[in-house]
Structures are given as structure tokens and as C-alpha cells.
Image 1: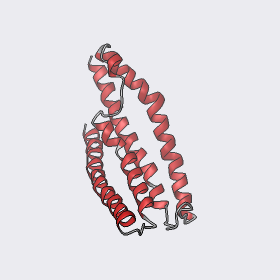
Image 2 (image 1 turned 60 degrees about the horizontal axis):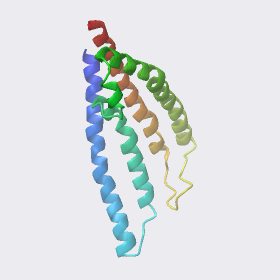
Image 3 (image 1 turned 45 degrees about the vertical axis):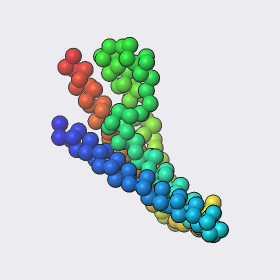
Image 4 (image 1 turned 60 degrees about the vertical axis):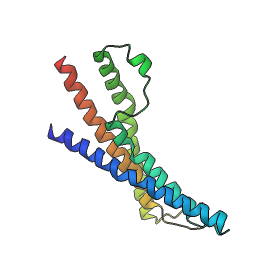
Length: 164
């Protein structure tokens, strides 16, 4: 199906784009370490930027990892079961755990992000006082991508069960 391929491509490209955040994160941390220990002049922004980049990298990668089947599984037990039973367990996992959790994170994450944007929220934990609403929008966006990839996986599993 074309829509499933489109979702896969979105997950693939978002993962490839987010991969570059690791390079940026390394540069920010390296700069902060040099500023702090070599020049005795730590930045006000280094820790906060590193935290934002890392959390975006971590959350945003969920759809890519779902596409690549890289999430943690108990393969020792799963591999002892038939492929049909494995597929049914995966469907149950998607319906009972993944879909509700991802939907709640998209729904409430969007509400929090909009309230943060409307209220022009700034960080109250740093001296930098940066705006944080763009960062807050990463939560619903990341979980939306994860939800879409999970829906694509669900459809593929159902199709494979019908063929068996």
C-alpha cells in the first residue's frame, strides 16, 4: 500500500534527520566542556541546549526505531512461539499499550504545547531564560510519528495474519 510506504518513508527520513542531532549535541557538549574547564567560563545556555537536543533526539527517534524493529523485546520467549502467535502478541501490545499511550501523549502533549506557546513560557530552571514552547511541541510531534508508524505496523500484521 502506498500510504504504508509513505509512513515508512516519513519515519526513515525523520530518523536520518534526527541522527544529525547527535553531531550537534556532541558539539554543544564539547564546547561547554572547553568553556568550563579550559577557560573557566561556563555558558548559561550549554546545559539547556544539550538537554533539549538530547530529549528531541530520544523522543523523535521512536518512529525510526519502530520502523527498524529496534525496540526492546523478550526474544528468548518470543522466538519459542509460532510466527502467528508472535503476530497476535504484537497486535495485543499495539492495541493495549502502544496506541493508548501514544494517543494520550499526542493529545495532552499538544494541549501543553499550545498552552506553553500562548503563555510564552520560558524556562524557570536556567539563568538563560529561553523560550521552551518550540521544544514542548516535540513531544506530540514525536509521538504522532510513533503512532503513525505503529498503525502501519498494525495494518501489516493484520494483513499477514489474513494470509496465513
